[in-house]
Every structure is written in structure tokens, then in C-alpha cells.
Length: 154
Image (cartoon, rainbow, N blue to C red):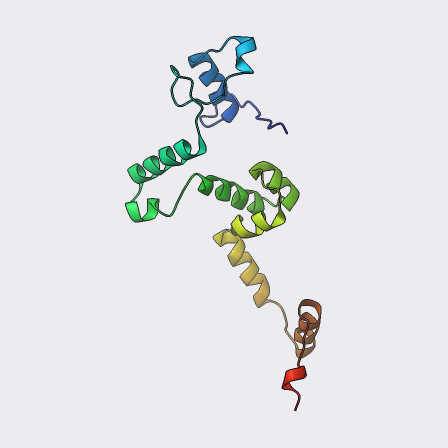
């Protein structure tokens, strides 16, 4: 599956622009590009950048920019969580979020897609405006739960 990266001139964090600059800095002849990894640990040995090496580099970066106790709670996966959270806040559906985060199941979106403080506040404000009657509660329970009270009946 392809990943499409739009080029946005002047955007300091644009992935397409960064990849273009990387290719200029570490040029690889056309036919050889298909054989070599895009990201390498060392431009001399051409050893591929592994997941564990990336995790170590990100952990080192986090320790450099935040307190150690906070840094220890984050990893490279935190970026995927952040992306899923931002996409949820922007109103994207699960299939779009799964595609962007390269997840295969809705369970990953449910587990890692966090709601923002603003979204939580909006939902709480909306909930305060609702009238909850015994009938509403009973319908909710019927729709959401299988009630088995056999052991409660004497």
C-alpha cells in the first residue's frame, strides 16, 4: 500500500519536503534505490534503520526535552496516538484513521485515539442539557446490556 505525502512549500515539518532534502543529502543512483533501505543507521554501511534503533533515538530525544519520568511514558508510538487523536478531533472516521496510522482494526483506534479536552468538555456540556428519565435509562439498558437476573429471583 502506498503512502502519499503532499508537498507543501515553506512548511517546516512537511514530510515530502524532508524526504526530498534527505534524498539530496544522501543520493542513491536510480536503480540502486529499489535495493537499499530508504532510512539507514549509517550512510557508510547502509545498515537499515530498525524499529528498535528508532525507538532508542526517540527515547533519547524525549529525555533531552522533558523530565525523565515523563519521557519514560512516551515512545515512537506516541506519535501515532497523537495522529489518531488529532484525526478523531478533526472528525475523521475509523477507516481514515486506520489508514493514516497503518492500523488494521477498529480496536486500535478505540484504544489509542484519545479524546481532546475540548471534545470532552463539549460532550459533557451536551450531556448536561439532556433529560434523563427512567424510560431513557431502561431503553439504554435494553439496547446495551443483556440483563440476566435469574440468580436474583428468589
